[in-house]
Image (cartoon, rainbow over all chains, first blue to last red; front, side, top):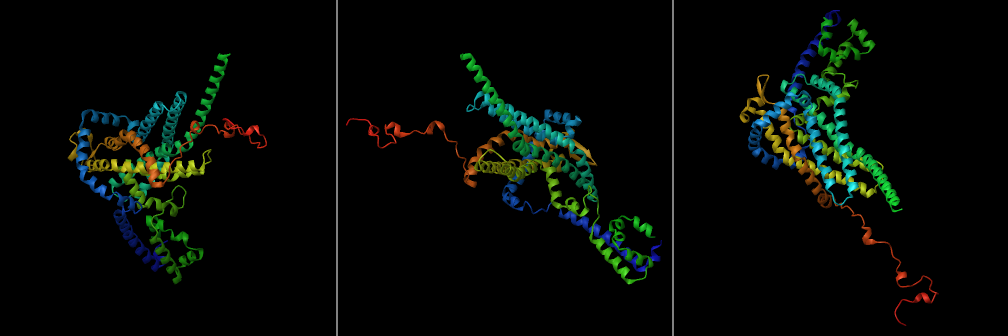
Length: 228
Length: 248
């Protein structure tokens, strides 16, 4: 059916609408481009760190040259090239970094526990094994969760990029990298800093204590048999 | 032609024809009443105010779209790309200051309430210290990396570390990422030591909390009935029991 046959007034209103929407879409993208990075949520924190940020802005060039020197080192450059060539490592590099930080820190705590003279040698060992197991469990579960959420995050990324389709390629690339990095950081952070200490450690402690008590009871029985 | 118009993206987003009532649609077909043109204009104006509606995982568009269009989310994603350590520290701050203390207090435990409160305060203090240390130590490094990322050719001479993407020379993404996270990996141990060392004074002077030391059993010992030492019985009628030692 021809639109002219319906109503001439309607025809003109639709034409006006299309013209206005085009204008509005243009202004909306323009305002979006300007509005980015204007969050007031962290304003007090930003104010607190303002003098320090001024100082860091002054020294950042020097640090940049230092880092460039480090990157320019032959061995370092070679390592990065090797790491990039392995697809599994390169794809999950943010996750690997988070896992490595967790492993280093947990290793330090295990070492400290083993060196603690205030604890019984048996209890010390049990505690250290406990800590190591919790760390291993957290790492495995974080990688598993990271893998499971990959599909969902891909869908989300596509939708997010579709909504912001009119922005520049560089910005879209930044959004894509940001979503992937945020996902890995949040999953590893959630497991290492929340699920492991609140839910896993108490259970592991209970198991450890039970094993310790059983061992102590067995040793007492053995001692009494030896005395007899 | 109306067919060409309905195929247009913006018209689909409008969906005025689905919102209009049956009577309005009938009247529209006749094209007679003025009320129709008014209602169409009304719907068109309503449509102008609404932006493109996309179905988000079955959620109603209005509920989900705010998240996709939010400037805070954009700002967060920018920080997750360029300042990963700060982003990590900020997320840790949220976890350790809100979720962990809340779960410590809410979840059933054999500990006393005071102990639970102390554990919650301990978590908050560790989160604040961790965030502060990360900000102080890692902000200059993150800023420097951003500077290298913006102008890589000014700083890096080794061309193997540079890539050409869409006609622009950029820093190798892998190198950028590891360099960004390397201070955290190397500095996690000193950061942990510093955090553990700073927690008690911060709890004491900022929150007014001090952990009660467990009572030393060897010092307090077993409660002693001093009447036995004085050879004094509780029975006052017994004369012998008044003997406290010494000569009469």
